[in-house]
Amino acid sequence: MIFDLDGTLVDSAPGIVEAFRRTLADTGRWAPDEVLATLIGPPLTDSFRTLGFAESELRPVIARYREHYATIGVPGCRPYGGVDELLHRLRDQGWVLAVATAKRQDFAERILADWQLDHYFAAVAGASLDGRLGPKTEIVSRARALLAPHEPGWMVGDRRFDVLAARACGLPCAGVTWGYGTLAELDAAGALAVVATPEALGDLLLGSSVVEEV
Image 1: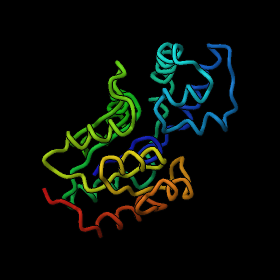
Image 2: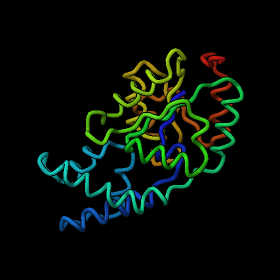
Image 3: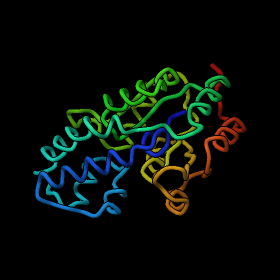
């Protein structure tokens, strides 16, 4: 099984919004927090295009954002209630787990380690520092390859980007509404199921016929 990180396993909204806010201030720009909150989940290139940055500006502005995020964003993440219990339950029932996130891989690994969630995951796939791996579909595909020979069975995420990437990789997607996406967004993107709590997600997945025993 492949999990998204932000909005699925951890609440990272305050740190992400603050990192965007500081980056915009550094470049003499501004956007309301309600706009910045919608940028949680997409690749950073898409987010900064949405904020009006030209292609030639993307690399330096993303580098500036990551400087801010390393100091205020990573320490500000918190796992959602029930996530640790969910991961323990799935692993004990034979799931092989991975993370696929648009967040830079070293940041993702640091967050998982900080909250002692890293031992649940056989693989972590994130955005690469050099930009070679960025779009969510590529990241999900990488996570799937890292899990081989085990089939992941499902992708779990909170935004349409997760659903669309899962579908592109031939995986069913379970959407979750405790993160930053909405039921309407997940349904429109084609999520096979949408759940509201980690407990309900566990019930869904453990009732599925696609689980693979290790």
